[in-house]
Image 1 (cartoon, one colour):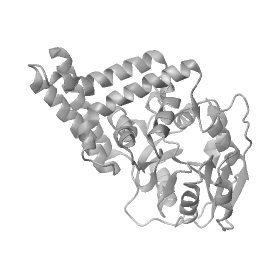
Image 2 (image 1 turned 90 degrees about the vertical axis):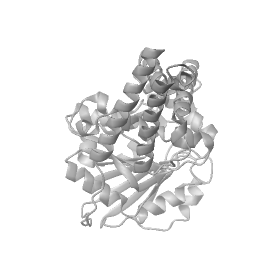
Image 3 (image 1 turned 120 degrees about the vertical axis):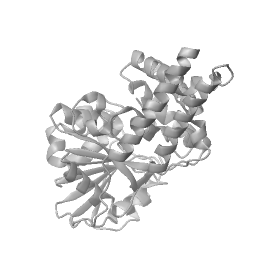
Length: 365
C-alpha cells in the first residue's frame, strides 16, 4: 500500500508537470492578423445521419474568412434521416454534395471510405477534413493553414473544444485532451516521426493534398478504427511530420449528444487504442494505480501520501480544463472516478470486440 501510494504521488505530479510544459509549448494559432490564403482550399465533410448538426457545420465551413478560393464538399454517407434534405436548404455555389453508397467494400470501414471518396474528387491545394458535428470559427481554416506552414509540418490536427452536456460526457470526454497532454511530449512529437508519439483528432485535420496523396491518403488506413492517429502514422512512415495543435479557439465539437452515444463511441475504438490486449491491460492498470487507487489510500494511515497524489491529479486536470475550455468545477475533483469509468469502457470495448458486436451508426466494425 505504502509503496503504491508513493508511486501514485510521483507519477501524478510528474505527468501534471509534463502537461504544464505541453500547454506552454504546443502549437497554437498566431495572435497576429492572418494573411489571405490564396491557394485553393476544400473543406471535406463526411456525414452519416447528422441532421441535427449538418446545417451548422456546413454554414460554419462556408463562412470562413481569409480564404479566397474556398470549396466545401459533403458526402452524404447513405443517411437514413433527413441529412440530405437539410443540405438542400443551403444555397451556395461553393457547396457540393455527393452521395455515398450504403455498402462499403469489405476491406474498408465507413469513415475512411467516405473520406477517401471526398479526397479523390478534390484538386485543391489544401484538404481540410472536419466531422459533421464540428462548428468552425470564422478564422479556423486560415489559422490552421498558417500553423501548418509556420511549423513546417505536413499535417496538423487542431484539437477542437469539446462541448459536453450530460453527466457522463462531462466526466469522460475531457479525457481526450487530458490523455495526450499528460502522456506525449508534444515538442518532441512535432519534430519526430516516431509512431508511438502520433497524436491526432479526426474531428479537424488539415494537410496539403500533395502530401496526402504521397502517403496513400485514407486508403492507407482503410480498415483502421482509429483512422486519424493511423493516418498521421502513415505520414510518419513517409518521413513527414505532424501533430495536434491547440484548436480550442478555432472549433467546437459536440461529439456525443447523450450517454448512450458516448458509450457506443468509446467502446467501438478503445480496444485498438493501446496496441493490443497486453498494452490495454498495462495502460489501464497504470492509470488506475496512479489516479484511482489514492481514493482508497485516503482511508489508511498513509492518507497524507494519497492526498498528495490526488492533489497532483486534480492540478493536472485543472490546468488542462483551463486551457481547453472545459468545465472546471466540479469535474476536476472527479478525475479519479473518470479514470475508473474509462477503464470500464475499455473492458466493455474488448468484450464487444471479441463478441463481434461493436458497431457505429448502423455499421458493424
